[in-house]
Image 1: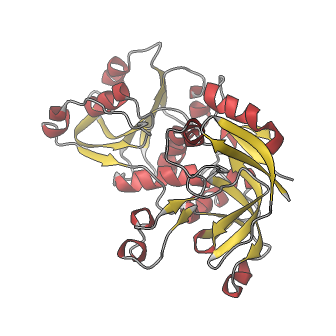
Image 2: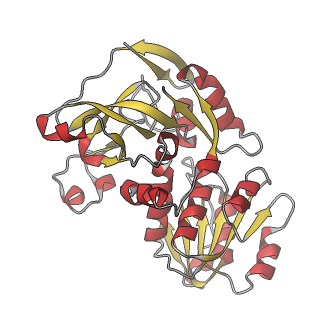
Length: 339
């Protein structure tokens, strides 16, 4: 038997004893060493994202391969790994081109299938990436949100030397900062409603930080970057922030929407896009950037250790979820750690 956090139905969550799962063909069993709490896990708990209940959440993870479903994957046994949580057919046109999220049979672990808030989890063998010894399991679990940032910047066609404005300083916003710095973007501004996480952004090397409850963002950016910004990334999914993003990009610039909008219908001024020839990009996932993410960590180009705010046991799931929801000052991520 194993311990696992289970959402039985929306708003009904508990720690349970479950049978240890057995991997099928193309899958492996992971002895989970670390699993990070993501804000979208709260949406699953609240019933705001389609999910197959009862469900164990958790799609940001690392661990050791404990069992394999077929002999062809036996070389993974005993290895430290991270990996994609995308379950796909591998045969359709989308899969063959690498666009797994467009697979007609796509399912994501932690949403449609049991995830990593557990002692063991089943993951696709084809999505595994080896985790180097010099990268901790806790940091390895953050390769998923770092992959979101890398995929966003790729979609935005961000380039070395371009300016960048990041709206939102949660885990995705801070990962955007880390990725933007690693690829050589300059004069990076990070803004958030309060100063709670902006000290971490400064520590990670942001050129400017702006607390929008204290300072008018539009006025501040007129001083910092009067001609507008090359790449503006919204990591909030909030209507007002998206509206400001369109006004703060330079003419011909790029606005990338990386924040989850929670299904809301929003108003934007289309002429802000049309007249200023903006490129507006949807950027909602990581597009299998785990290998690139872990390489940046291994080579010392990205350090996300300051984003690990709390290490907790599975028994402390309520504490971790409460922190993720209330976001006390300076809090970024709570991570389940299994010995």
